[in-house]
Structure formats: C-alpha cells, structure tokens
Image 1: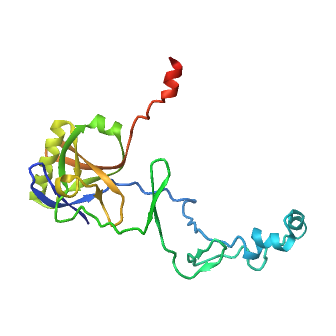
Image 2: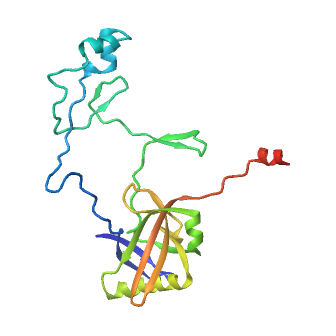
Image 3: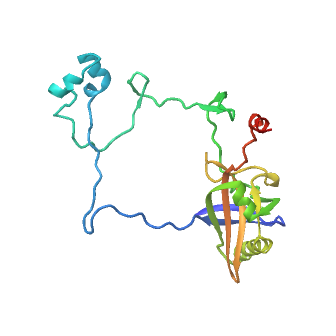
Length: 240
C-alpha cells in the first residue's frame, strides 16, 4: 500500500493511503483461443552493418548487395534471440565493460547549458516527519484546469473510522467552497511533492467531492504550468 502523511487546514495530521484510478485491461492481440508469442530475431551481424560493408566493398556497394547479398549471414540472421541482455557501446562501437557515469545537464529555458553535475538522489517526501500541508493558496476549479496540466491523479483513502472522518471533513470543506487547495511538502507546504525516490517533483492540488456519506478526496499532480506567450513587440508595432 502507498502511504502519505497529510495534514488538514487546521494542522491535524494523519497517515493515509492513496490509489490511482482503475484502469481497464488492455486488449489482447490475436484470435480467440489462440495465444500470441512475441519473439526477437537477429536482423544483422556486425559484418553486415554499414561500416563493415563500406570497408569490404567500398563506398558504393549497392551492386554488391544486388549480386550476392553479402550483408546476410545465412547461418545467423533470422535466428531467435532469447534471452537478451543490455550492453553499452562506446562512440566507436566497442563494448563497454563498465557502466558509464551519468551526468546531469542543467540548461536555461533557451537551451543554453548552465551546469553539469552528477545526479543526486532525491528521497520521497510525502511520508516524512513533517506532513504534506495546505499552503493556504486556493483557486477555483475552472481556473486550475486552465492554468496547469495535470499529469496524474490519485485518490486518498481511509483505513478506519478516524481517517474516514478526517478525509471526509477535508473533502466536504473543499466541495462546499468549489475550490482546490495547493498542497506541498516541508514547512508551510512550500516544497514540491516527490512521490517516490528520484521521482518527478509535482505541485499538488487537493479537490473534494461529496455525496452524503460518500466522498472522494482527489490529489491532482502537475509539473507544467500553462502561460500565455509574450506578445511580439515587432509585430504589434508594425500593425500600428
């Protein structure tokens, strides 16, 4: 079960679970009563690749392909490949026997490289000692969906009667106001939410829906804000 440590508007906190929306099973390819097995087949050997062919037959080896199919090793091409393992190749095509070091590149909005550094592990912060809290910033639902792109939505769930009352009260408060509240991690809810280790930082938006004793407390996650592009001063001046 996935857990989140969350506080309400009054600062009361509890650890509850959350789940994603139910998904329909994917369609299975094939005919009824017949199973399909996906296989990998060897397409070419190193001797049939462009650099080797170019070295053996010259830059223009089209006629050689027509006359004799030298790129096809009839003893190997078409064989089933199973199992497979991932290997890393250098820029020269040589097998690397050690995993390369990953470098994180930081760029400005215009694409200019600003910094290179080794990636740092970023722990999840939704089950930390400080709970996920209401930031105090609210907005109408219609404004939220026009300003932010929601990439994921999860539902907070209760595990007993106390957490039921806890979540139901939050959902009722938000449903009656018709607003969503921005939530975050850390003191004052100012930090983005990291749902899992080295996961994507998200802004959290809490929405409540209530139907009597039934309720849904939804946490919408976004890492993209929609902004109107700046007006082109040159085009506006030309219109004048």
